[in-house]
Image (cartoon, rainbow, N blue to C red; front, side, top):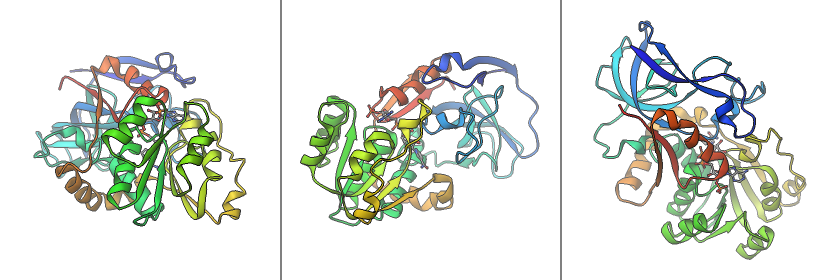
Length: 333
Ligand SMILES: NC(=O)c1ccc[n+]([C@@H]2O[C@H](COP(=O)([O-])OP(=O)(O)OC[C@H]3O[C@@H](n4cnc5c(N)ncnc54)[C@H](OP(=O)(O)O)[C@@H]3O)[C@@H](O)[C@H]2O)c1
């Protein structure tokens, strides 16, 4: 059987993904011991994967080699299995390939069998997936948010941020978001009911932040110049939970805060966190996130693109701000 997949032909420049990734086709190889085959129904678009496409060796993961299929989280039914604990028909999530069919080592890919009774399976990519875990862990553990504290989240209308502001609110904090544009800010305040939103693409971002008041926790998805603006507006003994550095992903720069001295002046704690480090807590995090989701207290809008051939359009949204909520590619499974 032929399988279509996105092959990494070159390292992308900026957001020119079409020049770097090519839609290719190859026959499926026989399944090896310990492997499973997944008919992908959905691909998760995750901004962090942009770093894997660079050639930097000092990231939290080595660069993906050129010539191989692009990897990412996938969702779908197992069609063949040579791994214990996986049977044809099981709904699974794994680190697979941007392809019609993923072939993965069940252990190395972190494959897990999912509860098929969850009505909207896309939730396994959103609140019940890596974004949900990251949001809850980052606010509660790394940010050490306590009820009544003021939590600010950047890229707040994206998948991770949208969950982080809601989690902060659910934990009794006053949640604020930073997002690009009036529509995204209105979604955060009017639909999600958070305390306020700062439009970083509008005029006078500093003034908007000043009007909001000081923050105890900054859940940072962006880094770059925004981090400087926030550093000077943190409350004493505040915490900055560094989730991601979107400002650096497509430009190749490195966040180098000019206002770093505020860490001392305001006695701040800055700490990065990375979801694979708390993967073992996944089931417990999922249980809590699922309770909130089932009663409608935690919601996720999905930005869905249909067809494997349109994957790059979906992916680019993460870096151009084209999405509200979780970006997903839906395939004909
Ligand atoms: N540490 C971890 O374990 C972990 C796990 C998952 C995700 N993450 C991080 O979470 C962040 C969000 O990832 P995601 O996959 O959930 O994507 P996402 O938030 O759904 O999409 C990215 C959003 O970020 C905003 N953005 C893009 N470039 C920006 C820039 N230069 N400055 C300010 N905002 C920018 C855009 O919205 P606007 O319109 O607002 O610009 C865009 O819609 C990333 O930094 C990612 O690396 C970390």
